[in-house]
Length: 400
Image 1: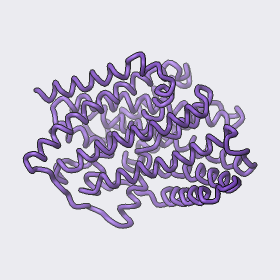
Image 2: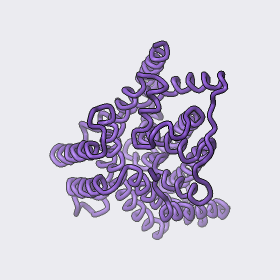
Image 3: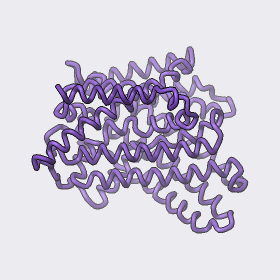
Image 4: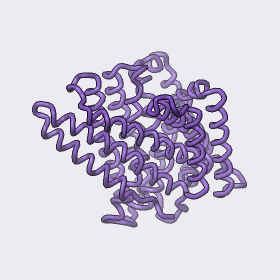
């Protein structure tokens, strides 16, 4: 009872802070909201159980590696943002062509990510009901796909996009409560000598390719690249860095707390495993987590559907309308929903985003090589491009 009250206090205090006029009115914070919401959205729901189950006691090291890799790709994108703004020289024709290819790859990645978000929505939506099974989860996912298509086709997403800050606030507030609860549970175990150090289930190449397949769980920072109509380049670059720093801190605390308090096999590894795990920590957490999951997945799906449609509209020089793109996205999403599980879709999305990051790294390398003293930096970006290609080819899903 005391822990439940403490969790609610943490949730309400965080929500109050996020809605304070000083923070809510900050231009940097507003610019940071979109990438931060994307980075710690779906990944927060699935990463804990996956890393704890597969990597055991060194799960925090894998989390650190994922965050470091994401930050490195963020650096390449920030370098390109700076170049486009005229701060690092003019782009060549090759770089402009690569930028268009990167935009196409991002539009495709958004298509898969929407399927990822809405399949998680379906899984969490039925998780606390009497029809908690894959079939009914897919039915709910299908229904939400149809709702999003209908709204996008008939009215557009402007009204739904206004939900974003409410969704972000809800999610961050609930995450604060969850971290407080985990900290109490962790230190209680530590005080009684009950911490658990599970041995890794996998190692070597399989461990690496599984990590490749999880890159989408720390994806989302690239959204700052496409906020140019709302914020200047300096604000977007700064907001992306801050979003990655904050999300890294949250993820490292989360994985550090969750990795040593559960026996492997204590819970079935599934999309909603975090709900059962947190139910052991505090009775109130499952309800809060499901609420956060539904809000976060729906808003993220709306944002990526809108982003994909807008990109296709621009890239086809208005020949394919955003509404037609929404229809194509829905069709592909439904095929993925009924032919793959969430963990497979996570892997597909990771590989699609890796292709985008690879192209951004190639653009950054090309730009750096043309600049005085940029040879070393160019080699670093070229190495990132190679890693992105490896992720796109070899990323593997979690096996359950």
